[in-house]
Length: 473
Image 1 (cartoon, rainbow, N blue to C red):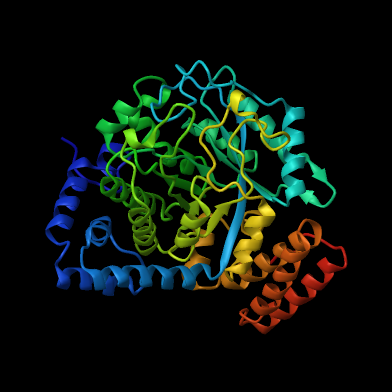
Image 2: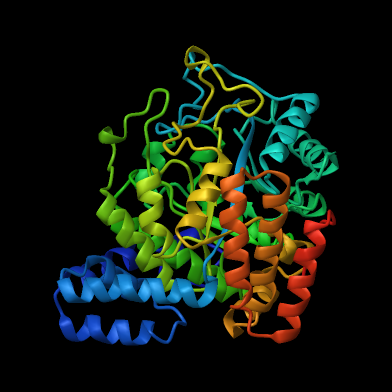
């Protein structure tokens, strides 16, 4: 029998089933305990986070007034650390060849009617140029697990290709990578290739459910998969991104496991995950979410709020799996990054794929163009940011977190967001988006409290309007 130890190297100890079940039992017993919920909320108002057990209580809370406080506090924390900035990115699917048997993913090896594709380097160039022509500066590279068709060498060559492409004023300045768990040596190679964040979704922290959902293939090894972030950080990748696929198993169990994983990385490495993603199971080629544990919009929003309270410093990502309406509701509750203009098929940016040749991993719900998403965010009062400065200036891992926790990051993030937004407006935006964006830039420059930073940012923005590019703090 494994015992709970957040500093352990063993998955069964830092994601401990008994500890999760005890936490869920404690939450169930205290879901109407006004005094205990009040204590947790008072602790959370210090904006230094709460424990996985305390998070479980807030998620289970059935008191109407306290649930309103949870939402309001999540909004306060989001505003305190991330302001109005929303970082933009797009996924780039390189290949959907995969040897795993994940029952919730259409890439599974037994799916014989999905169109299998793998991009050549020339095709990657065309995809990247199409993404640059939209205005994207940050990509998340995705590929199925297949050592023959998608070896690490292919991923490394693809990253090199992506970074090499300069088209008009376009350039991809940060490549995040979402590929299968691998070895320390392979993670070192990814680090040397200049990746931003290494992203790997746990899918589910329930070991029994995990084994049932992953019956065959290398991903079926729960411990190897769960311990992947440790190996990545040991290899020097200090920005890692966690996440679960909500709807595979019981959402309360997943939230506790997710917070425990963040606690483990903090305890062992001194810095938690750079980002947490909150995808929900959605329809795909041969996947029906109703056959799993699909969750409602209200529960989804509460999950986002509780995660924001539990890990106030961690970025949160929501993708185009979610609808426009769903994304709008969670933006204020904690989300700091969203995708826009996304295609989840292989080669889908150059030419949108016919339905009969479906190679997509999941159905995109929010199908608006990047300009439509940027315009929408501006209309809501947000700052769409294409910033990659911290990664390029070496402000990653504990260096980034120390700036965030101290509040000093605003002197970098706010001007960088405004300058990269100005680049987008000058090079790619529609007339209406440009007008809205320039108005937001003028208003948000005043939010910068440091007069020297504010003056320099204003000068850089003027330089961008005159044709110069790539300023950063």
